[in-house]
Length: 125
Image 1: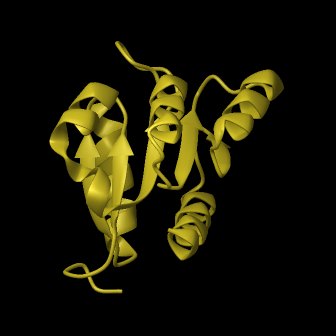
Image 2: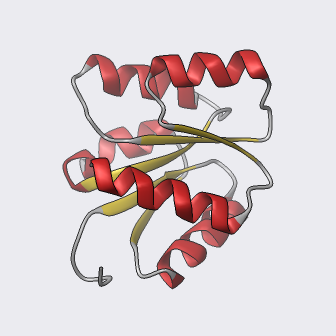
């Protein structure tokens, strides 16, 4: 998949340095990437229609990742969501997966694990 065609991987995380790192990793794998500093900015962007996969931080100021996931699911969105968090525990993992996330990864995330999850998500998008 070239960077000019195909679905976009959207990263929503309030940590600017992590957004840059994830963007660089995914772009180096030939993926198209857009980043957003909050759930609200993502929702206002109108990018949902071109999003093939959403990498979503769980804890952010304002709307958190789980709330965004639930909102997308309630609106009928079929965007595959990967939750990425530094605050993972089994209960949170279960709640995220039950809400519709297809993967739950903990920070610091291994690049290969994230790439594998994103590629898997893009096959169901």
